[in-house]
Image (cartoon, rainbow, N blue to C red; front, side, top):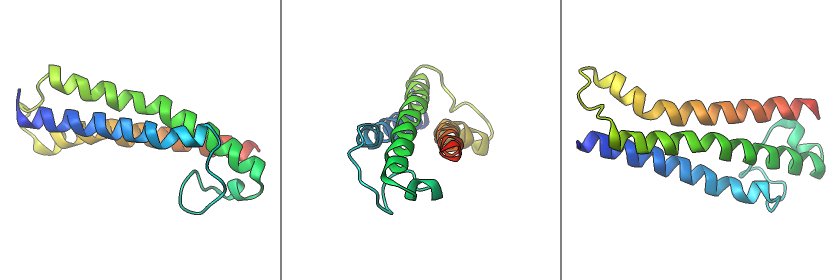
Length: 116
């Protein structure tokens, strides 16, 4: 197994687990309204009820979508990608699961917030 596979595997697993850990307090509604931590859409700041509803939903979405980068990270340990001739493509394959999954979670949460 190459260092590239190990690095990309660790990167995806670490990011996925970090997003899960960050999301748990949001799901449990432990984070009061603030400007630093949580899903900070305009609707989030309308009321405490909106804040907790949006952030709880967003935390759940981020947890769900963070499972994919963790799973992908383990796949890097099984399937070699370091044989790819295009380094840009290899790097894209490494960061795409993280970027796509967090983006989907954010978009779904934003759409949820618009319904409130």
